[in-house]
Length: 118
Image (cartoon, rainbow, N blue to C red):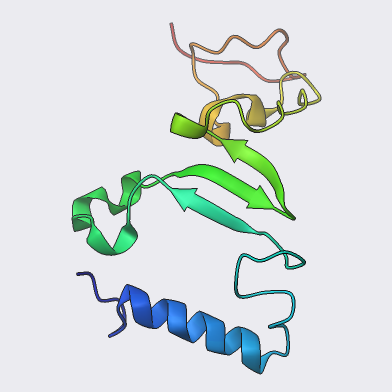
């Protein structure tokens, strides 16, 4: 079991809940219940039980904000509404990671920008 800063996963969960109570927001945060905010993510692996080398590979497979699915992949693929089309079309967010590469399929080049490579 992974220990981070001397805390286990269960201790993190316990601390989070007590923090919510101390902040006076236990009526709207801290548990997944009717009438409370529903902001959470389902991860591809358990952070506290994967090898250290695999931590950077953990991804969100389902993200819910305000009770609405805003991201879905893997076994949850297709549950989220499609993302809006970025504008302008050449915006860096149209590429994974926001970085452009020579294999880009963008429709137009930004003014004054040249792509190097062959």
